[in-house]
Amino acid sequence: MPDQQSRQEPPRQPLSADELLDIVDERDQVVGQARRADAMARRLRHRTVFVLARDGAGRIFVHRRTAEKLVFPSLYDMFVGGVVGAGESYDTAALREAEEELGVSGLPAPTPLFSFLYDTPEHTWWSRIYEVRCELPVAPQAEEVAWHAFLSEEELARRLDEWEWVPDGVEAYRRLREWRG
Image 1 (cartoon, rainbow, N blue to C red):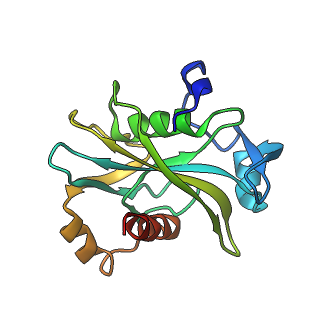
Image 2: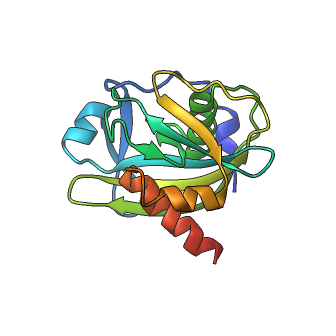
């Protein structure tokens, strides 16, 4: 359910490699802070948001990340999202990331669905999955998105074996399909 604190937080700019992230433990409790680049380089557990954005017809926004991305450059993703800044709520980060990456403003608050710990030998982060309907014309952020389209569930399913996808997004999508039953 939406966090009351999220309505009181100031708008944030896109997070750079130098911005602070909350470092969290296995129960998603804050235990410290680190620069984004350090958190990635040292495999420090932090927080991320994944937002499944659908257009008015229910199709899913799919994109290829730019080659300049710090993590998983040039791979395809079926979510918009990213890291949660230090002191920022998941809900605020979800809206910020969705609006930034889709290039829109006035998006409805994304609906939180569930959380899971993404944990591999290379990366570890707490992930909260959201969904939002975007009926506005999108103008994706050029620094984040190299290519985009809205795909039906069937088209996305066909592309899963053809395109190279971000591994955390594939895991989030698998868990979302499982969660929906």
